[in-house]
Structures are given as structure tokens and as C-alpha cells.
Length: 454
Ligand code: UDP
Image (tube, rainbow, N blue to C red):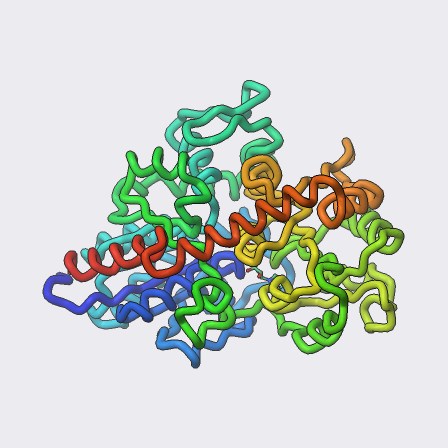
């Protein structure tokens, strides 16, 4: 199938997780706003269970198979079962989708977690763009492992790589410093780079100013374009007037409850806590967080998904407590943007970190796994927008440590510097997405190249 003399039409495909779909869908909105026809696809199973509404956009929604279509179990499917099945079913299903779209697709933007999609793109003579939803820093580490330039298990006590600060082993992603714990995920993140040299573009949700050194280094390898941060426009440059939210939610957000509860709380007085869409701290950690928050001096809003919600004292869940509110899901952006929020206790999933940066909210980092350990290092030591609450030898952050770190960010001596940095990065993030900013320019160039190359 030849793609010559066609109007550009981009098919964007995402791994089925909130933290991947949010940035990829936002990128679709930017392409549509610049006049590019865009179709978005993720797995049938994700679409079936999540709340997704693209009616306010001009994006067409499609699905592909993860191999579980009629029989995905309700409970968590372990990576060593899920990934091979997706790897087997995905390429065939994606080929079927490209064929179904009847030759209109000219470029495939694929999630780095789905590298087989690039092979499908090449098979249909489409251009291919890899899209990474983790930082350039984190991907640089995985790249070095992929090319045998960094060995696991890590042999030295620190890791030194081009474009990165020196990292203690514990500051590398957990799939690197504990690579044998989740071998299927280790393979997934490292294999992203098997065929990346064949990609026509390599896109990152980061922005240039945030990771200059490593981006400059990566540009020597590939046609790199940073296009983020990928928050809805109304939280950044405000150029897309209808773009207020991500249009996808894993669970129904308790928006009204949260906004009512935050209403009238003094400015920057509330601590917001969330551990993202995939992880929830283990029971011993939950206990410590509850202690830390109950005994601490601040009011709090905390997202706890079920079944862990049952471990939290009832008065926090049913709204009786003046001290804190626990909800199963919220519109995180609207919460972070609320003037009552003073700090964000976060697991450091990259979307959460970028959202806090874009809204100028200082962080207390409590990484759980994956890239979060490296993101937490950057939050504290590189960007200076928060502190880490470090766990003890048992891997648990005590309530006392958590409370002390919250206090430090909310009102301690260090808080002045942290707040100053938070404002600095917030402004730089906005500038990157405004007209003429680094990411805006990169998206424009991508769009021009789409037109020239099709
Ligand atoms: N999120 C949300 N409501 C919540 C918790 C999270 O909307 O109650 C969103 C959050 O804004 C972010 C995404 O879910 O965009 C989570 O992505 P992240 O990369 O932070 O973490 P992950 O879920 O991938 O671990």
C-alpha cells in the first residue's frame, strides 16, 4: 500500500493504561488542532471498562486486541501472562485495523511499550513515530541496557550515563535495580529500543528545558522531538478552549465531592495524596500514612482505590471528618489546580509529576516502583520542586517521616526555595507549549514533516 499523495492521517496507538493514554490522547488533540486527521486506538478491554468520551474532539476512536477480548479476568493479570498474549495478538489485530481503515493512514505513532507496531507500520509502508511516556532520562537508562552499554545486575554503587546526573543504584528505575523481580516488565522496557533506530521520529512527553542535557545527547541518535507537557490546554497555554480534561478516566471521578470539600479551605493549606492508577501502597504502608496524616497538622484529600479504601477509617470516606477526605478517584488536574492545595504526596508517575510541575504544586515523593524512583530523584535533586520521603530498611515510609516531609514542603525553611523552583518550572512548562515555545515548535515541525513525507 503506497502512501504517496495522500492527506496526512495519523493513527496513534497506546498501551492500555491511564498514564499512557492521557499523554497520547492529548498529543492527538494538538495534531487535530493543527489540521491533521487523527485516529486514536487502545485495547478493546480498556475502552470497555474505562470512562472515555471523545465527543468534544474530532478524534476517531478505534480498538485493537490484547488477546483477551472475551475473557479478561476481573483480577490483575500478571505481566508475564499479559505481555506475551498482547505481543502475539497485537500485531495481527493492528494490521487488521490498518486494513479496515482502508489505506487512509499515513503515519503510525506508537507507544514505546508496543515496539512491534513499528514493524506493522513498515509492513504497510507507513511512517512510524515512537512515543515515549517516560522521561528521556529513564529511557536513556533502558537504552543503555538494550545496547549492552550498561549491565544488570548493576555492578558499581552508582550509575553514570551521558546527560544524566550520577545516580545511586536505588535511584535507577526499579526494573533496573531489582531487574529479577518482574522479568517480563524488564524485557518490555528494555526491548523498546530493539528497533527504534528504524523509527522516523522519536517523540517524548517531556519538554526541552526540563531535560536539556539528555535530550541533546539523544538527538545524536534519533530524530527526537519533545512535545510536552501533555496536559489539557486549559491548564497550560489555553489555546484550545474546549480542552479542559483528559477525556478518559479509569473510574468515575468524585468531582463534586472533592470540589465541595476543598471549597473554603484556606489557600495552600491542603495536602493532596495519590498513588496513580496502577499502584496502591501495601497494608503496612497504608497504616503508616493514616497515622502520619491523622497525627499531622494538615488537612488532606487522598485518592484510595478500592479495595484498599476499606482499610481507611470510615469518617474519612463518608465525608464526616473535617481533617480529611478519601475518595476512590478524582479529576486530579482540577484538584491540583485548586488554590487550597499546598502540596502533593505522589508516587511520582510521570503524568502526576508533570501535572504538579505545570500547576506549580510542590511535591513529597513516595515512589513505589518502575520509573518513579528516578522521577523522585529528579523532583528533589535536579528540579528542586519537592523532597523524597525515604523508606526504612523494611521499605516502609513511617508516618512520622511522612509528616516531617510534608511539613518541610508546606512551611519549613526549605519550602521557600521549593516554591520558587515550582513557579519557575511551571512558567517554563507553559512557555514550552505556548506559540513559539520549544514543544509547540516541535509539534509544528512534526506536522510539516508529516505533510512533506506523505
Ligand atoms: N489520575 C486522575 N485521578 C486520580 C488519580 C490519578 O485523574 O484520582 C490521573 C492523573 O492525573 C494522571 C494519571 O491518572 O494523569 C496517572 O498517571 P501517572 O503517570 O501519574 O501514574 P500511573 O497511573 O501511570 O502510575
